[in-house]
Image 1 (cartoon, rainbow, N blue to C red):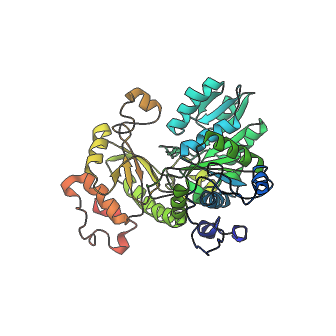
Image 2: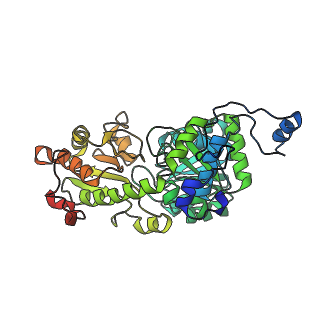
Image 3: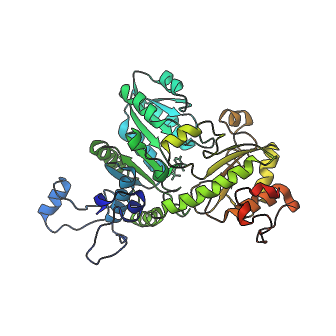
Length: 418
Ligand SMILES: *Cc1c(COP(=O)(O)O)cnc(C)c1O
């Protein structure tokens, strides 16, 4: 059925879902570790890859396959491989595609554990790596060596939302015989399809936008062609970082509303980013949907929309950031992103509080930096929450009548109330 679907939103709802004997509308949870063969010959044929069918859940399972086929259709790749976590997908990509003596060029602000795994662990197996600002093509070119076999990028990056030019990097990597792997978690398949832009492998932490409900940890890889996909699958099954059927069921339920969730959160984010940009207590706002973003034009070329992640700098520095954390009432103080609920994070006092200030600054994490993952709540409530947090008693209490400040005509200009 899925091959007949062309529009992204239709794929979200229908791709990967096959008819079963009972006409179940939703793929059931095949909570089984193993699958019985009808005969010795059938078992032999399945092991030999001559017959379709499942053998053992680490190798594949119908509930997991339904999700994998759905995301592969969204990314327009050859096949998906679901993993226990996003890091399971990262580990699989590294171990499937690299060998001793290889060199990797990677985005400097890549997800911390992806870098730690590469620098502390892959290095023990003879894989070298260099970290550069991959939004700078010359820096990538300069970092390439004869032994570079992989370019590993994250775009948009965290927390500065830097955009790496996927087609340009793909061309550069391929010209040197390297593969391009894209961690597209911050975009989701709705906003960006790296395989169509030249990447060989795209991966996601489905924990974030794809599942979208902050109730599951998981990951997925999609390969550009059959050969790459088969290699990734074999490595994943040997590593044993498979997703489980219940997890896959939950993620598959979550992904169906991906477009709706992102459209709504993105609409909220555009409004909040403009509101923040006009506040005197904010030094700067970094949001892909603002013309002030340094790669606004590039983002428009390779992304369908700007998404819902905003970073901003409090003029009051560390104390102002910390105080904001203690004053918000609607946004939850939590790491992670991409869920229906709004989350706020102050790296200097939270995730990176153990890192010395000089090192934090080197990583682009200033003392007043706040990361805001916009959810699907009513934008007026989100703005009121920030406003009361910034202004204290001068702000609005949640749950009050917003009518006076947020009449319908004022929605596009909510700063009038400050
Ligand atoms: C969260 C995240 C990961 C890791 O995913 P887990 O599901 O936590 O293992 C990898 N890359 C990016 C960009 C992430 O945000």
